[in-house]
Length: 85
Image (cartoon, rainbow, N blue to C red; front, side):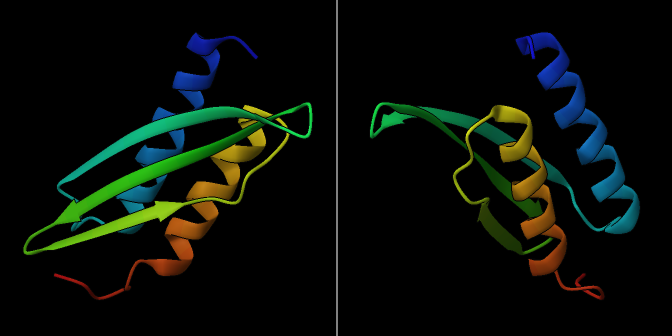
């Protein structure tokens, strides 16, 4: 997956997250890549903010960047409180 398609996927996931959690005021993402046991590994880190709160989320390390994006947003949906304001 090229970086433009990956960025589009991240923006799509973020739009869905914001629709589910409208209190989100900002979200920054960083895709990390490293080599472990001669294999490329990826993890997406999210810095999610809403009034007077901040949540840092990291999905599990994955073998490809798309799976890393999915893992991070799944973790964010599980961690964000439904009624946070």
